[in-house]
Amino acid sequence: MNQLLNEMKQRGITRIKFMVSDINGHQKFMLIPQNYFEEAVEGIGIDGSSIPGYTTVDNSDLIAKPDVERAVFLKDEVIIFCDVQYNNGTAFGGDPRGILKKVLDQGLKTMKNTFYAKPELEFFLFAGKTPMDTKGYMEYAPGLRIVEDAVATIDVAVERIHHENGPGQYEIEPVIAPALKACDTIILLKEVLTQAAEEHQVTANFMPKPLEDEAGSGMHFHVLAEKDGENLFESFSECARYFVGGVLAHARGITAICNPTINSYKRLVPNFEAPVHITWGRGNRSTLIRIPGGGKTRIEYRAPDPSCNPYLALAVIIGAGMDGIQKKIEPPEESAEDVFESETGDTLPATLGQAVDILEKDDVVKEILGTHLVRAFITLKKKEIFEYTTHISQWEWNHYH
Image (cartoon, one colour):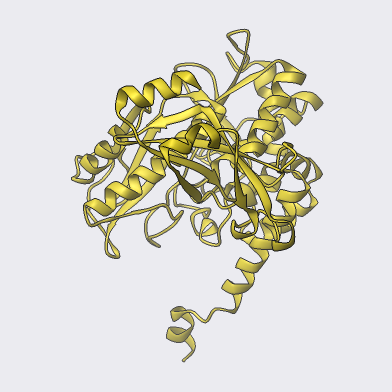
């Protein structure tokens, strides 16, 4: 606490933001006056009924407790991530960040494992409804400067920034980091990218599939586990194999969390560079799980997209993997061929409705997330599905009018 105050003083920071995440991965902010900061560190009351997925109006009092270990300095302000609690100090079951912390704590207590992650964030930059450029993979494009400037505003280590295959599509790859910090980084990147894009009169678009004739945007998660500084997945160990087995066993159950929007399932279709089949392979970019070559051995789960809440997505990926380790779940045979166009084998759900139905039946995934979160998530998603189903689209007018 004193160290944080001293650094704020040295940097001349007077603007303080507390931040919490709602169930959809959207951020809620509170500006804290500097002269109230030391008192606010003990926790500040919030209205849970006004935050999607939190509480009802008749039981809405919650506390946002700042995690002073996760204070991030921007150019002229400091953002502090908060944990959400009940008034008695117990963790609130609808806090996505708190759910990931619970999963990570379980891994540390039961297996002595510390998990690390690297989410790869893909997104588009649009000028109006048109991509801001027509460049291709790893070509230089003007949007790179916008992205570079955005990343430079926060203290985040990044491996690379490059243009992706689609017009106006970019990717940021942060360095692998402790799992909670990795998700905090994604939250920060989306915030600063949105702001930087607006300053240049363009829009940062995190839809999974904004353009029907182009590949969509994913957010692949790289994950590894360490114990006493040793990579437990090294050389695709038995531990790594069981982890893969667990994730694949629950792949259908975690899809609603990793791909939580109607639009997500327009990306998860054949022939558009997104995984459909429940498979794994070494260095195989057509599989759901890839074991990348080079560097530390890790697993890459390729289904998630940037519309997901990163805390919840990583919680179910790691939780499913831990279930595989505990139960010694063997993965299916490795896929060495291109499975993008395969017409056989198990597949991910084809719609959000299917994914929600499967989530409701996966007891392991429901236990990972907890009763409150599951109930709130399913309620929100069923409402979203109903709104989409009853909406009369332009496509229907074009075909049936």
